[in-house]
Image 1 (spheres, rainbow, N blue to C red):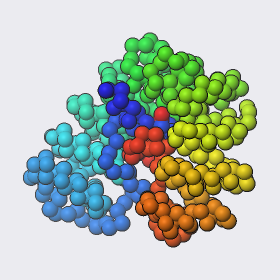
Image 2 (image 1 turned 90 degrees about the vertical axis):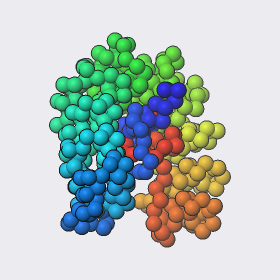
Image 3 (image 1 turned 120 degrees about the vertical axis):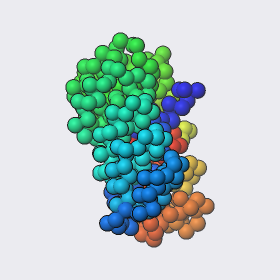
Image 4 (image 1 turned 135 degrees about the vertical axis):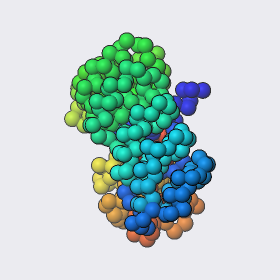
Length: 385
């Protein structure tokens, strides 16, 4: 059961490959992170009633107030809850404030992080270190490394996740030692592989190759090993990827297709991606569609995308194809197909996304790569897997 739960969490941050990576070992929030730093409705003064709630209210009342601020996104109120954090005694409220800044990108989060990473409560610290990966800053490197030898479990996983996000180099030797000693859990192994995929530190190449090829490894470890090979393109590793494709295992194939564009100098990767776009597995087709983005103007690829748009029963894939044309307006048959979806799709999400692409409505984002894999909304601007 623990591995099933971790599967959802592990794929929420990965790699800013945008891969599979989610908040790998942390809970995904119920709402997606806001793309804006400030509210569209902003006041220079905090709401007086909200201030009183934090001064005199119960934990439940404070949490209810945070929910209201999530809706209004008033900058003064956001600053107020960040300033309140050092005084807060209740761990539920602390975690709710941290979750607010997971879901709403705002520089006030940095003030919260400074206090939260020193908290005595493991759950609060776990959330705080994960917050470091959303607001990466090299200044967190020293305090994390000073505490990492005392950490274990999900707290350790969150620390490793943060070290990858801030591209820490001094952590490489320690993390490699922990991995090779084989005394850590599989979830921590996943995070260490993610760390090397993000930092591209050459010290991690061998463990990434071994993890990708070892069928005896837990599934999530092996998946992350495949993803991490995207950081080390070479002729030798291209051959490894080809062998992995030959295994014909959908979850392995999906991850190989995800990293294959990094290997274009070593073989005809487009051929493999086209073939993957016709795979029975939804996840394999999804990653293939994403990988075809750079080729979408080619007649053969446009014909393939058009066929999939009209005939694929996966909403995630339909959304992804439409999203390929967000930055370059569709023309001809592709325009007509997307317009038809804008006019008559049974899915409001597809309809709104199609309208935004052809200029008839506001955007509704296609799922990110990790959301498509896990079915969980990503809470970072964040994994793997």
